[in-house]
Amino acid sequence: MYVACSKCDKTIAQEEAHRYQKKKGQNDYFCPDCKRLIDLEFQQETENPNYGGAVAVGALAGIAGGALWYVVEIFMNFRFGYIGLAVGYLVGWAVILGAGKKRGPTLQAISAVISLVAVLGASYLSVWHQIGKALEDMDGLGGQAAGLAISPFSPEILSAMVSGPMSLVIWAFAVYIGYQTPKARKL
Image (cartoon, rainbow, N blue to C red; front, top):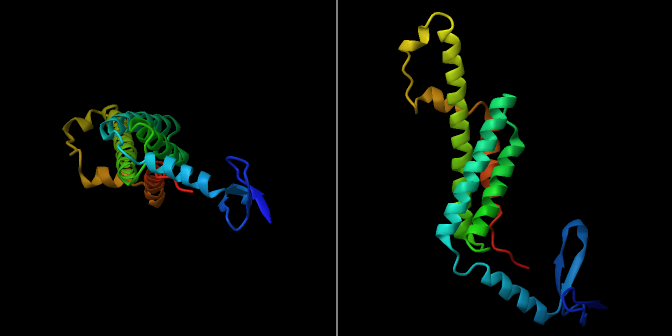
């Protein structure tokens, strides 16, 4: 049986072709020459990344994603898990673009760390917003909040960030998506 190369349309025996299974069960076939070219392109995507650009652009995306998380959580008064996925995806692509459209394990680690910091930072700020609202309410009841001192990293703050197991799952998904997005491609 013969198949056509998906890149150059050259007819080749199916046994000689390199099969790539796409989503929905469809197959692409590549001749050995096109497979080598594709492998070379993917290899070049991992060479000489701009780490400074990856961190800078990834951090900006993390700030933007964290701000979106914070705003949605404050105004809707609940955690919308898809925002965590969006943060990871946004940071992952920002790291790729900041690195000069490069991919690889180091960029995956950078993206995962930035994604984690973004969602944790947004959760932390959200808890502080809720504390501020509670203190305002207490002040309205006779000024009792004036004498309260709360440590920024007290166990109460940290436990309030984890409002349940779903918080951990959402954070894990954000980190996972951030990690997977800049993964080196291969055929």
